[in-house]
Image (cartoon, rainbow, N blue to C red; front, top):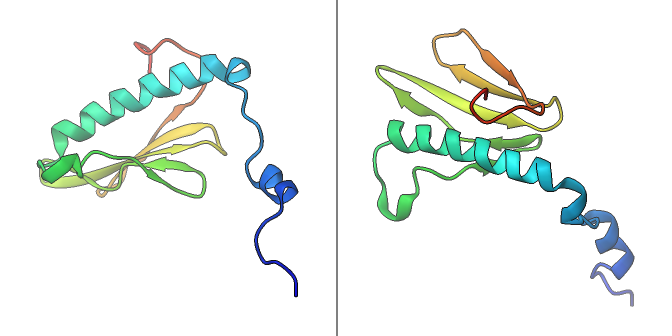
Length: 108
């Protein structure tokens, strides 16, 4: 009878090493950008117990806020790590994108 659990080599393929030193600048920048979007989400979303209104959710291509209220409309922010852009999608149309490229947080 074979064991259905993953072998060590399978885990290495699924979870590759991510040495922090090699992507520290990206980590710090992404952390700050998600903080900016998180503060916007905090302002636009009604308070829910345990801050459930503010997390990002993992998608197949990155992170999303899910819909946020913007006056009478809603919008959603998506960090797409495959296309290297953040998309802000309002329900009334007019998609906005921001390239996820090296830049100061003030420019973001």
